[in-house]
Amino acid sequence: MIADPTVPDPSVVLELLSAFRKSKVLFAACELGVFDALKQGPTSAVELAGTLNCHPDALERLLGAAVMLGLLTQTDGRFENTPAATAYLTTASPRRMLGYINYSSAVLWKMWDNLPGAIVEGTHRWKQTYDLDGAIFSHFFRTDWQRREFIQGMHAYGLISSPRVVDAVDLGRFQTFADLGGATGHLTVAACRRWPNLRGVVFDLNEVIPITKEFIPADVAARIDVIGGDFFADELPQADVYALGRIIHDWSEPKIKLLLGKIYAALPVGGAVFIAEKVLDDSKASPEWAVLQHLNMLTVAEGKERTRAEYAELLQAAGFADVTCHRTDSPLDAVMGVKG
Image 1 (spheres, rainbow, N blue to C red):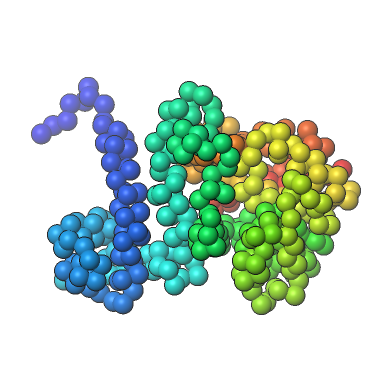
Image 2: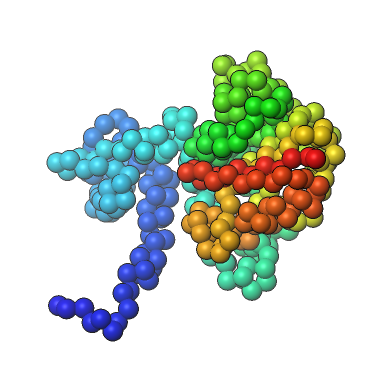
């Protein structure tokens, strides 16, 4: 059949029509424990169905979809994890992202179902989706295990990005790198490894600190302090560069201006604020990760992603000068402003 040249190619529409099904394959396979079960070695669908207490034919369909997506391989009717699945989707892996994946499936999925309401009203969907007036995080991480698994998922994400962003700027002239809201300290660890002159401080909420201490590796532990506190309410630890890794995009403009004001006041002259976020192009239509996060922040938080010019305007309004933006090949970029 010869395609009609007067009819537009429907590929982009057809691909997007089924895109959510691909995410659900990942979510379902993680929830059912497929990747953990396959860590034992190549297994048939029938054998795996017995292990997971699933319907054999139905599970085979899911496994075939996971092969199609590059999460599994199949040889002679036996299925096996790909290296990426073993690294990011099994519970024993130190790089597992399961906490964030399960959160995306159980929480974010439902909030994105209400995206039209977010667009109409210009606000997050906490109330519409869950009848909540406060931030969703405190409601969904009620146990230590839930909090740990979410933080572990974000840690795995950070291991991908943090070495890239600290390598994108010159931190060699600074002495103390304080990561505000630093969670597991992956950004501070990467900075201390890349810049041997640095001392690091990880500053996060008191309930996070015990988890943070478990993640600081021995090779840099002597150079990193871990301190509990709320960066909005409490005094900031002393430093000559303050880092905000995936913090700016979470919060409303007034809260961000408050935080940047505190940072500017605490810094010595020549000190800097270091921001790790994915930066939008001027068109706000790329890169893909930033564009989708821009919508995600509208739907589930209070903030947004920004362009280079918008970061420059934000930082200059807080008093910072010499604002620079450095793109990386990772999910995050680096923005820096210096106190003149």
